[in-house]
Length: 141
Image 1 (spheres, helix red, strand yellow):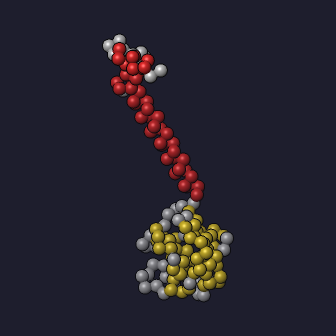
Image 2 (cartoon, one colour):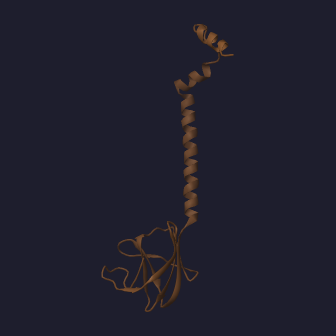
Image 3 (cartoon, helix red, strand yellow):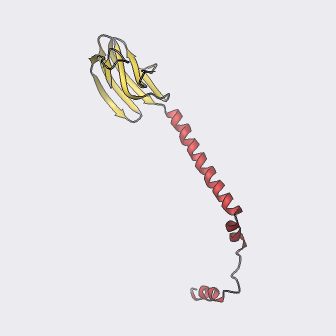
């Protein structure tokens, strides 16, 4: 994360430091003091699932020409919180669970309709041609 004067320039000037309070794959929290105003650039690609809160208020996340996220920071002390939207993750997880269930049911149905699966339904008794199987079963009891 950098705080710079120009979000699209490779030769931008660093304006301020940010103190990172928390960081993981889906949540970033930091505080900074801006004088003058500038941009907070997160050097990873933007996704519609990211949300940003500047001092507790929702603020838009923009994208520079390389696809990195940036947020406009006005002059003053700020607390910035970026979170990856959990609502989208819930729908993706639910979709994958339903897809897996349908796949298992479809595979089971297909197997039972196949000639190999039908043979399982036909086996009800021990064939008379295999008397040794019946003797082996009696010895075990």
